[in-house]
Length: 204
Image (cartoon, rainbow, N blue to C red; front, top):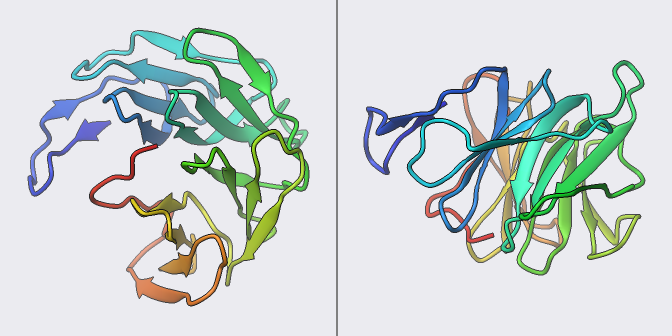
C-alpha cells in the first residue's frame, strides 16, 4: 500500500502488508485500516506508521471485501462468512477491542461499506445492484438506492449529499444524490471501476 499527498505523483509512505490488501479506510485522526481479502483481517496503522500496530480478526468473516470507519473509530469489515458459504456479513470492531457480527439482513455480496455522519451503515450490494442504508441499530435497510449496475466500494462527498458509485465492469462511476438516489450522472473511466474516493476526504 502506498500513500500519496495531494498533488504528488510519488508516494510519501509505503505501508507493509503481509497479506492481500483489498480495501482501505482512513479515520479522521489519521489511523489507516487495510483489509486483507483472503486473510479477512484488518491491519491497523497509527498515523505515519509503515507497519501495523495490530490486526483485527473475527471467525465470522472469511473473505473480506471492504472496510469502513466511523467518527468513533469503530471499524466495519464487510465480506462473506465461512468459506464457500456465501453468507454476507458486516463485522464491527470497537476502538478498544471486541468485535460484533451486526447480523444485517437483505445483503448478498457486500462489496462496499461506509458509515455516514448520522451513524447509518451504507452497504454497496454488488449482486443486487443496490445501495442499502441501515439506520443505527437496524437489521433491515431503512432505505435503498437502486443503481444501474453492480456497485463496488462507494464514497460519500464531505457534505454527504452525493454518493459516488463505481460500477465494476461498467467502467463508470455514478454520482448519485444521497440519500434520495435521484439526479444521477456518470463519469466514464477506462477499466474496471472497483472503488471511489473524494478530495477532500469526508470526515467520518
